[in-house]
Amino acid sequence: MPTVSMTVNGKSVSADVESRTLLVQFLREHLALTGTHVGCDTSQCGACVVHVNGVSAKSCTMLAIQADGADVATIEGLDDNGTLHPMQEAFRDNHGLQCGFCTPGMVMSALDLVKNNPSPSEQDVREWLEGNICRCTGYHNIVKAIQAGAAAMRG
Amino acid sequence: MEYGRPTELDEALALLAGGRRTILAGGTDLYPAIAAAALPGDILDIGAIAGLRGIVEGAEAWRIGAGTTWTDLARATLPAAFNALKQAALEIGSVQIQNTATIVGNLCNASPAADGVPALLILDAQLELQSAEKTRHLPLKDFILGVRKTARRSNELVTAIVLPKRAVSGRSDFQKLGARRYLVISIAMVAARIAVEDDRISEAALAIGSCSAVAQRLSSLESDLVGRRIGPALAEHICAAAVATHVAPIADIRGSAEYRTHAAAELLRRAVANAAGTA
Image 1 (cartoon, one colour):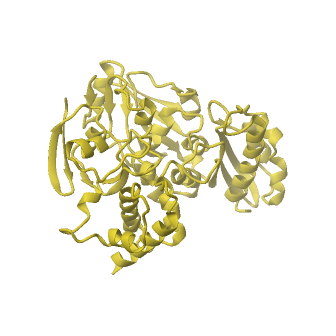
Image 2: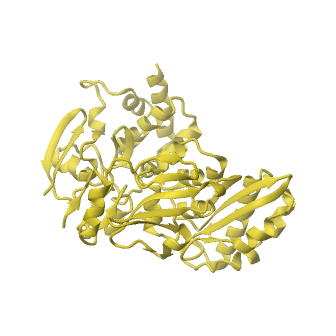
Image 3: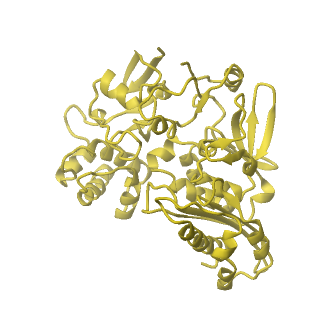
């Protein structure tokens, strides 16, 4: 079995895994980082979005070994010693979640958007979220939350 | 099952010379295709090979390396002849897929609905294939042979897309029709590249995808448009009958053959108008 090493939320991790192990399985099953969700397993829903070397990727369609040597960020790495990240806070303030299943992926996608576009319009947010599906169809507040989070991050 | 992830091209070619392997670049199609089963035999992951990623302008041609992602392309500064390819880049999957998936992977997958193919056909794209013994070039139209079938030999790696500069002229446009706006398999898609001189079309390149097993250039319609004055009247020459001389679409859950033909003609009218600047 190949050895996979990467940095996850700033910590170096290494494990022997089967080649077919998906990045999301590695995160959830080997590292017990279960904040990254698996919704569809086919790259459609976006519940599994994490950042790989600073850009958003779907961890259900990426092998752990493809991320060998990469810098990976998950939802668990966002808070600052228990203080929510401004984007997480904005989701809470704007009730940007109903069941919460899609939320980790939504937040991680939102942060990639804000990095590329610090002041996204409503249309920008809706277009960017094409790869994130909310099964509660709660998009209205998610879009509001992302715009509020972006504003908070601009300071 | 062996998983190879070399860092040098020579190592990759040596692995391919040693036996059949599934080549993985972004991997966005491989995993959904195997659906939780074991990986399909030995894998060659080309994601760690230095120098395969990037878009470079040479003296005679543009070169898109095999590791180049759709996001890399969408963010690159490129001539207007690339507009169709850039538009396709933004319509492929979602942002996360565009960040991971490669342009060359889209071609090697050889799906009839591959968004990248029409936009590259109108740029006279060639593929550079390397094996341990030699390098050869094939026009894209001769590379994709059928549904999920290409002319790549098992010891070869597609290392780049080469776009001759003579075809990088004018302006292009891409139009895609799906059952919804995003994250959808195309019912029909078209790409058009038009060069204009003295208000007349001096060069036209048109291609249609998702309407035949392999995307097609529309050579007779292209010849018909050359020399015509640009303006709204151009649309009269682009009709379903002209499309039907080139493609015979299938009927499936996404649309009937007749619907696809009519839709493709309308997409072409829009793409030509945009590319000619008369929209």
